[in-house]
Length: 162
Image (cartoon, rainbow, N blue to C red; front, side):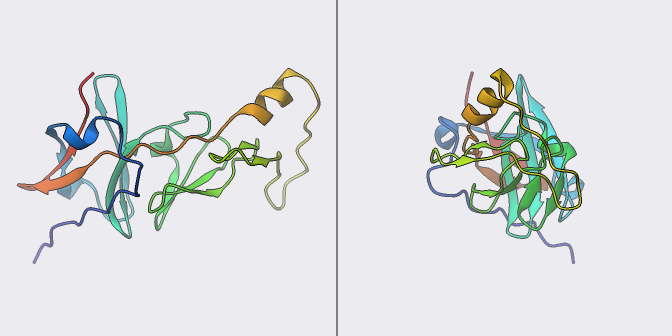
């Protein structure tokens, strides 16, 4: 028996503006998104990441909330998506930062996290200058979630107009 995938709840306050009232549109066949997988689907100029986490299917912008790299080419472990660019990790179940990107910067609440080096690698220098100042002022944004439902074997998503 084939079971219908479940849809994960959207963390409080993180629904994309206008998505709550938007019409649902077909995104991809539910059979094309296996548990633990991620897929990018584009709607006009909006790239959406569909991730089948251990909590169910979620849809967020396919952009790292740090520096906008495509998360769909990263990796998914349970509910945590790993960015391929600066090794940041983000919890799709809560919308919170699980590990700050290596470049450091500001958490969504404004807390500064310095540049760090992954274990087993040579320390990463952070010479002073404009790039260091830019890193110190780069804020990790909150995820924007899009409502998802499963209908007729299709994953559908509510995408705001314009």
